View 1 (spheres, rainbow, N blue to C red):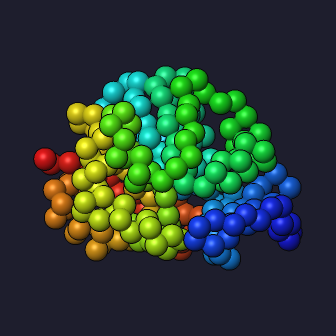
View 2 (view 1 turned 180 degrees about the vertical axis):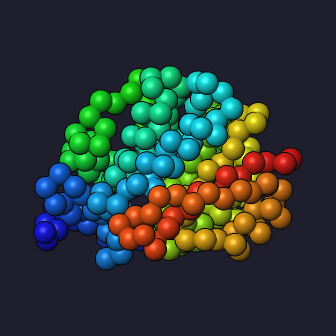
View 3 (view 1 turned 135 degrees about the vertical axis):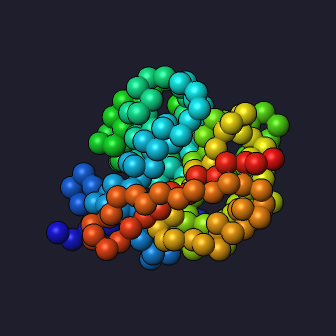
Amino acid sequence: MAWDLVETASVPDGELTLYRQGEIYMIRANGYELMNGLGHQSELALGRMAVEVAKTASPHILIGGLGLGYTLAAVSDALGGSGHITVAELSPQVIAWFDRYVAATVLPRRPDGLSILPGDIGALMRHDDFGPFDVIVLDVDNGPEALVSPGNAALYSAEGLRAFAAKLSPHGVILLWSAFEAPDFVSRAEGAGFAVSAQTLAAVRRPDLLHYAYVLTPRF
């Protein structure tokens, strides 16, 4: 079945396009597939994992990147009405598309304690009243490289990771989604003072295509 174009939006780094097949959506960034509702198993696994790694029964979880909302939906389901969720999404257009088209099937009932904020998560980290969070989930790009937006590179630097750590509650962790193995990132994070572990997530559409979750625990 072909994808039907729904809307196009100009963004600072180029163009976003929203497509649909029935009630399934896809977003492309500058022609590059950014997220696809036909293959969201790893996003669901990431959301469940965010609740599993939390050290408190009622955590405050920050999700960097809304996308099509599958990670958010999985966190909401796993929390079962407890805790709080904050989502930081760079593009107001992605938030508008989620509200207008996607939420009805992905997250038909919004949980209490959910906040979806437009803005650069890196900039939000500099606000004194932002946080603390028990888990910070980074699903901003296709992994710890700036594949979609050049500005994302700073998020995965040693300085960027320490800025996220400063917004964690005691015993908080950072959880990073990646479409690829990232040994250079692991070395960089360990050099910045984090203990790093990795978990393979569910395959997406092809059994040979795996995604990964990296758990970063500050040692400072």
